[in-house]
Every structure is written in structure tokens, then in C-alpha cells.
Image (tube, rainbow, N blue to C red; front, side):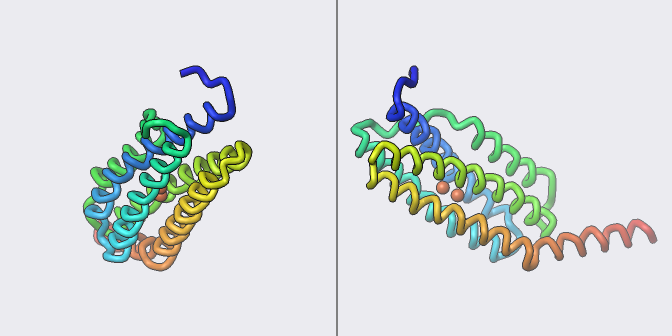
Length: 174
Ligand SMILES: [Fe+2]
Ligand SMILES: [Fe+2]
């Protein structure tokens, strides 16, 4: 499709996000399963429920645009999820892997924050106030998810991961 107007560009953004969110609906249960900390697992599960809502909000925007809901491959999200998969395969279930999972998930949230921020601004520019407020609602949930992950990392998981490394180094030294 050749983009010729702001409407086309906006639709393109929504299609990209639709694909990204659907990929996350599949990836988040795997990240929850891979988590060692019950709090991290709960955070992923909670954000999975929100993410299903993000898909539905995008579907409402497709309707407002008079288009069928259809995604276009989000190469960035594919890559970010692949990085999360390597965290799972490179480490055993542990606080160390949790720290890696959070680092991967923070990258996902930052991508979404950037994408929803742009899409919301496009919607405002086009005078699509209903779409703009749906996108703003999701944007706020992405920001909260990002902050929650950061708090988990700062609160416990990174320290435990550090202790793990220290005890391994100690064992090796003996
Ligand atoms: Fe999302
Ligand atoms: Fe998210």
C-alpha cells in the first residue's frame, strides 16, 4: 500500500500495533511461565489481560476508520520477542533469568510507549478524538507496566541475581 495521506499513515501505525499486540498475547504467557519470582509472573499475567484489552481497543479504532482489523508484520516486535526467547533459552529458571526477562520486557514496553504516543498524536491531528483517547488509555497502561517492571527489578530481582553470581564465583574460587 502506498501512503498518500495522514489517514493512511495513521492506519499503517494502527496495523503495525495490531500485529505487535497479537504477538504479545502469545508471548506473555511464555514469559510468565519462565519467571521465577511469583511477583514477576503475576506482573506478566496482569499485563497479558491488559494486552488483550489493547487488541480490542485497536479493533474499535479499525471500526471507527471503517476498515477491517488487519495487522501488518511488526518486525520490531518480532525481534524484541525473539530477544526475550533467547533470555529463556540461555538461562535456567532463576533470579538471574528474571533480571534478563525484565530487561527484555522493558524494551517491549518502551517500543509500545513510543508507538502509542505517535499514534495518539496522529489521531489528535486528524481530529479523531475517540481514537485518540483509546490510544491514550493504552499508552498509560504501557507506562504503568514499564514502571512496575522497573520497580520489581530495583526492589529484589537484580539483588538476588547479583548474589547468585557472587555465590557461583565463590564456588569457582574454592
Ligand atoms: Fe500493549
Ligand atoms: Fe505492553
